[in-house]
Image (tube, rainbow, N blue to C red; front, top):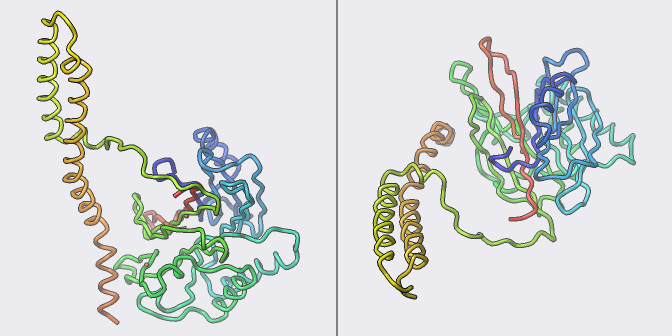
Length: 352
């Protein structure tokens, strides 16, 4: 959350209880605030958590409501501009009949509690898709479950932000292994109010840095009165310090600088055009220019290596086109093949 500047993360299959949350707070309580709901019978199954980055969002007035234990958690917080923001984290059942009942129960919950704030954002593992384009091979999901979800979306005034941004794109967040059949689907989604959607940007699906069969869907959220901030001053990329060509250049220029400074000791008076300050300024400009030059060479190489790591996902998309894409979710598997964790993340930012 620190490195990617994540403001809010929704975690499915959180497997949290009070003891585990206390352990997390002991390690990360200074920077993270965690709300969770656990399964009534055991903390080793299901569960939803909403984790907030204290360095990015206000956590002093947070309240949470458990809608369905271990399945749905509503958290009310303040947006970056101080306006209220309500987030509903969900982890829907996989069985079609249970999935349909799940959406119906959430709708009834809000209908019977008119004073409860409806969610501005709903995210999680839906375990269902609404259109065959979101599965490979393409197929329609259970009609009753799809209708129940559609009724909830209509009642809450929510839209699928990623699909609104990419109306015809085939991309998937869940990928079965070849041994499991190789199926793919866009199970993990973010729904936002139409008014909120207008202030979202950079919708994306990301491959995460852990072994998982899920990808994360991410987006950034801003506000109407957020100031426009420019690119800022240039900062030396830390990874360039490991570039041998650059370090050799700096070493050589440093030796030249030292020799020039030593010669200045022989002067009896200060020369306005040839002094330590002028030499130091020239040295900094030369190594800065060289760093920019090397960055243009080194960074594309890193980008290419990252693209190579993501290549299997892109190949899968190509295959799907030939044969006939935070939650934001990611699930790891243990040795017996059972999913043990899903994660979801929502990026929040008050500025561009």
